[in-house]
Length: 220
Image (cartoon, rainbow, N blue to C red; front, side, top):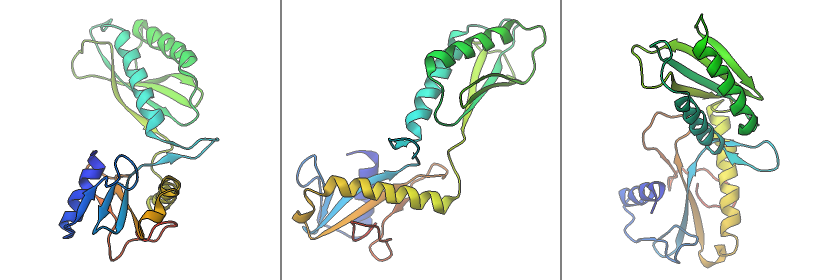
């Protein structure tokens, strides 16, 4: 049981459902069965990139890119003048292939490390990517460059519009998943763990009395 499923289980118990069975048919849909009749599928609501032939969660590009840039910064070694610098990058999709982007970034970082004048600047650009060295750290670190963060230019946007778009996408994918077994139970719900654009805290969409209607589910 993953974190989203555990949260849904707690939610159902909180709403006084007693007969709650996790994976009644094994590791296939539904995720839960309530009162022997209500089949429930669980989905974490994430923001997606809908460009191109394949839809992907924004984190599918952001996390690997973060790790690649962070590893590159660490590989640049110790401070050359007894000072470390915070680094930030900004991107949107599609990002230049890492094989060529890495060469550009390494060359720019190496040049900055030995430059006579060091100041805040965007030191490297690639396809839909910018790398900025923006300020000295308060004290030297083990490495010359320290990852400070990144900006995903496709993340965020109008809250309600983004939520509606991504909820409908999640519902469509779940509807496809349950198509072969939906006749087994008279009612299906989609419960969504909502984390879009929020500070880290637990929030759950999906109430018996005021759930939204989406195609393929009695409640969402």
